Each structure stands twice: as structure tokens, then as C-alpha cells.
Image 1: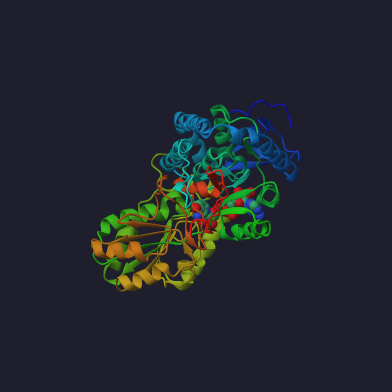
Image 2 (image 1 turned 90 degrees about the vertical axis):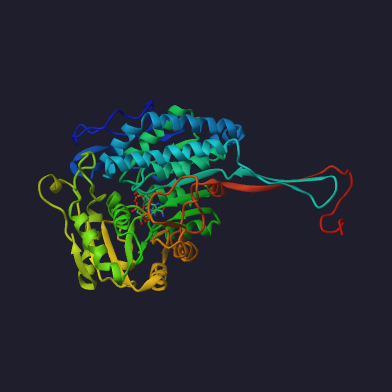
Length: 510
Ligand code: NDP
């Protein structure tokens, strides 16, 4: 560990001048035991190096877990309202620094600035919500079945929480996990995605400023295979919260399951929008484009399937195609840009490979190629793409592409639409456009997803409701809302018998 007091100042454009950032362990910014670092680059212009970050090791993780364990007793005995006050201060700081954070996010992961501001705002919202939990965190106080006996239940922290996050919401998702973990009295070891370590560092800097005591929050950057694996495998980490791909989620679940460890998983999605014959097609077009191409299709709630009644298919496709052709690609820091880059070269290759599959399965309407020319040549850009005539079970209609590719699936009537919508192994978000209130209520009942929208796209969750998916999108846990506390707490039921005699439940009250 070095004696550096804080992480380095603002990042630089030149690789030579790019600053080096550090882990944060036991209240100190420090270098990795490996002595090695890795780069984070701007996906809209890969000549722009955001910074160099510590290539963490299992030894770094062990130090971070030790620090979190050491801070645990002090933090769990800190009254929950006091813990909440620190979350409140963090929310305020995020608000004060919102523009700086949003610009740093756009630079590091590419989403357009208005969406980056939304990402920061989600972090602020969850911090305020969870600050309030410091004064709620309700348990039950219930009548006992026996006289002169008191019965109640309380929540208690699990211990050390391992927080492993993806790059697509690089501030919102860490806050969605860390805020409920911390307010309930857990301490944290945080491993961000290797594509967005700067966003994570900026968050932790503000957490330090807000007053989280040393050891309560620890940041270790580095690969999933080394740092992530060491967190998941440690017997001293009691709960893991992970958002990322289904493949990684499965492997984490196998390790955590063998250790009977608490695990919250938010995984892949293949979200559908149903457009019925009576839909407002202009409104549906707005909702679909926002959901399909916002964040360049890299949201877990992104719409990648449109299930449309055959009678309005041509009218909807004409609107979607015309509007898609007007979208401007480029750096998200440019206010005239609608769609930013994909996260990295691997993502461009993956999207291109699915477009090849789509060319064999369906009819290309618009897009379908890497976006090149001028400044785009320096980034990871792909044209917003629409396929028509897709079958509900076709690969492009089934597999998560995580890019700007939309499949339009024709059906006849609500019954077929509902079946097609549910024919996926994922179940995060869905939506329906209809003017018929009865059909809307059928959809709210029938759609097998954790989130259902009526007359809106599939994105835009609010932090005070549960967030998460059915089926292979997760393992039943939810983020956000008061139910987020369930991931990070153990229940304790407490009975106080003040009768002064032995009273046996289920026996002496018969
Ligand atoms: P990954 O699963 O590749 O990575 C997610 C995180 O896990 C990263 O921090 C990664 O580290 C880490 N990791 C990788 N391997 C391991 C391992 N063996 N053990 C522990 N940690 C590991 O996902 P992406 O970053 O590519 O994110 C995109 C995916 O996330 C999409 O599939 C998307 O659907 C899903 N997602 C789901 C959401 C939801 O709420 N359901 C929300 C947002 C995204 P490193 O970066 O170093 O590889």
C-alpha cells in the first residue's frame, strides 16, 4: 500500500500523460500488489486514454476483505439513522457534482450526455431513498399467541458485501447495490467493470468525502477472472450482488451455491414491445426508438423485439425506418448526437455477427453495418439496425445482442402477441401499446416479466419500485424499492416472555 492520500486529478487525453488511479482499501488510496495497471479508453475515440487503473490481485482483494471485516463491528453498531445521514450527504454531493460525473461517464463508456445525467440521477435517487431507510428498515411487531409475551422481528446486516458491476450503468448500478448494503450495516468490497473503472473511482471519492469511515467502502479494480473470482470465492464475503451477463452469473452462482452464500443476480434480457392494431403508432414509434437505440441498445431493459399486429406492421415499419435514418451517431459529448458508440471492439464484433445471422433469418430494413467515416473511424460505432419478418424463435429474436439491433415479429391479435412475448428465456421488461383498457390489464396480468409498461417503451425504471427479472434474468432477488434490503439483511425474530413462568408455544395456549 502506498501513502497516497487521494486518487489523482482529472484524466488526460494523451496516453503518456494519462493519470494513474488507485485502489481504495482501509481508507487509503493504494497501488496493487501486482505493480501492474490497465488502461481505460474513450469508446467514441480510442486515442483518448481516460486513465490507468490498478490491475488487482487476489492479495489486494484479501486486504480489502480484511479491511471491510475490521470496520464491520463499528459500522453495524453505528445507529442506522446516522448511517443514513452519510448516505444523504453522499446523495447531496452527487447532486452537486452531477455534471462532472455525467461528462466523465460519457467519456468513459459512451452513452450520450443526457442519458449519463440520468444514470447519475438514478444513483442520487437510490441514495436518498436508502438514506430514508436508516429511519425505517421496518420489521414486524406482532401479537404473541401467549399472554405476557412480546414478539417482533428485526433486520441485521450480513457482514461483508461483494459488489460486482457491469459498465452499462457505471454509477447507477453500483449505487443501487452499495446504498442498501451500507445503510443496513454491511461493509463493502466493490469491483467495477474493467471498461469503467474511472466512473467507479469518482463515486468512491465522493463516498469518502461524504464521511463513510475507513474500511466501510473498499474499491479493487482489475479483471473479473482475478478480482471478481477472489471476492466470490472468499468465505469471508457473506453476500454477493452481481449484475452482468448470464454466463458470468451462472459461474458465480455455482461458486456461491457451493458455499451456501447469499447471492443476488441481475442478468441478461430480451425485452419485447407489443404493438396492437389499435395502438397510437406515433407514440409507439417514440417508445420503441428510445428503448431500442438509447444507450446504443446496451441497456438490460433495452427493447430488442417488437411484436406487431400484422395489420399495422407496414405502417409501423415505415415510421421506424424513417426515424432511424435520421439518427446521428458520434461522441455522446456532442449535443447533436443521438446514438453513441458501443463499449468496445468485442461488442462491435458481436453485433456484426448477429447481423450476419439476421441476414439469413429475416429481412434487413435499415442499418446493418459498422458506422465508419470521419471521426467515427476512431470509435466503436455500429448503425442502428432493424430486421423485419423475424420469427419469434429465430436467433436474432431470442438471443441477447446488447447492441442497436431491433427484430420486428409479425403476429395476429393479442393472444399470439402475448405468446410470442413470453417465448424467451429472459423476463426483465416488456411493454404494450394499445388503447383498450381491458387488453392493457390482460397484458399486465399475462406478461412474464418483472416490469411491464403500458403505452411506454421498456426502459425507465424508478428507484422506489422493485427492479429485476423473471426466469433466466435473475435468481428472484430484486434491486431498488424497500425490497432491496432483503438481499443485504438477515431476519431475526425475537420473543420476550415477561410472564415469569415457562410458556410453551403451540402447547400451553391450546
Ligand atoms: P460481464 O458478465 O462480462 O461482467 C460483469 C461484471 O462481472 C464485470 O465487473 C466483470 O469484470 C465481472 N466478471 C467477469 N467475470 C467474472 C468472474 N468469473 N467472477 C466474478 N466477476 C466476473 O457482463 P458485461 O459487463 O458485459 O455486462 C453486460 C451484461 O450485463 C449484459 O448481458 C446485460 O444484460 C447485463 N446487465 C443486466 C442488467 C440487469 O439488471 N438485469 C443491468 C445491466 C446489465 P470485467 O469487466 O473485469 O470482465
